[in-house]
Image (cartoon, rainbow, N blue to C red):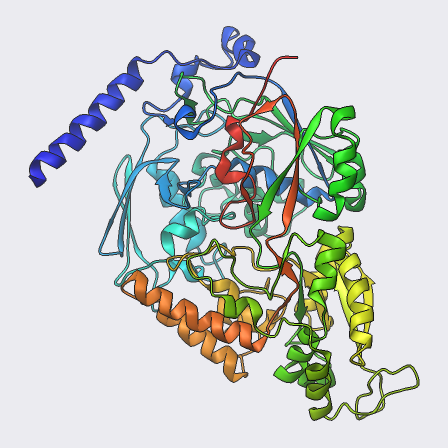
Length: 633
């Protein structure tokens, strides 16, 4: 029976390949002139021999037509990185059911959870027409990830099992393999992540910036032209796939940036060699271009409501919904309401690595964190800002996650100023000034400065409500507006006492997804950035965690990593969630909020309902924006 099944699979694959070979592929008319002038080959020669076929009708959507420009607004130039995020071209990616499936890869096999064999699509090409080969995997592994200069920080944690990386092999011209000594459950999800591990890079382009492959004279010239002092710094600048900042870097994404920052307008043109087609043989993407206009983030809701966008969710919040609805008929768009996949619409992040010794001691006392959470009236915030449609909760998983438990949602999130005052009194913060604010033993007022990125009004609106609520428990909240990069740098340096940001990026996690958002895994976790640096660098940088509860989190995360079954992984996930919610390492407000998504009425295939989150959906990514299309006027 097994042999029959195997033979059936082989016949099915061969039949599918033959039918694709015989298909009449259709390229976009915008490239016809380039084909006629010999600047581009015909569409059949631009596609892999076995392109990925997106069957839209099976997804309840319609095959479309080529053409049109997708207009977006962004608050800063760095947000051009959203286009490769939205394009979601990955070796392996999530589908809408959060199942993994090959995308750039033709197929993959996993043995014993530790041996991963990848098969490329024959004839696949980079955006400049150069073949994608196993040499691009070899270059990325040996000349970038494990190079002493380019990979000087060592392999990322997701590539390590018990501190050891995998054995990498090129088996033939279309097959590579990664083998660990023990199972690595992080590996495949890391390839489907919003910012994936880039295991293949365009070697034919990047070699010119690598010391190993370039002459000294030419390298000196390149360094001078680019005003860079070291070759590895130049190479890193030119290889920033995730940032989309180098227009000359070949890519496998559906759209390619054509303008180097800084600029007020960025134009992404279609990748003529993109590897996906619809069931009718139309090469994707449907949109010819994506444009991103840079402006002030706080003004984006007003401009979006005036019809300046075609598909937009970035910088829009539910508080903008009423305003956005008013412009629907006048500006020919609709406002869809997707469910936010964040653990909290916003969350307060007390910096446990703050340098100030008084604040460090205070914030590390769990009674203070619990008191801050208990002092927040989430019901009032929900009614005023979310019309009562959100869920009052700590920063935790959503009911859509198989790991959800109501106790995590309710942990220290009920409004209880009496208990909050009791905790603060127990800490010795008894004395108050004439305005009713508590004083530290040294006589200074307990003033909590919360730093914001200043990118949307929701954060400031919530903080203004919390100001009054915390006054009732003797805490003074001061809002300090800033910029995202400045806020992050201050938190990492230990200068920020508290920041406000999004809640958990992936609040619909399954047991097989890594629980690293709930532990200090990197400097991006602003409640413990120095501990995150320590973990990411394997103790070479940052600060060693010295809080027992945090050590427990790290222990269970390590046990998850070595778990043999999904059931075991779920057990360790639950222990991590229990500790995290009980210790209030981040202070959530509400989750399950609705995310406004503006959609031009001419655009087809945008889901009516979906989950909008950084992870695991990559915002629009898993819904495949390359399959969105414009109807004719």
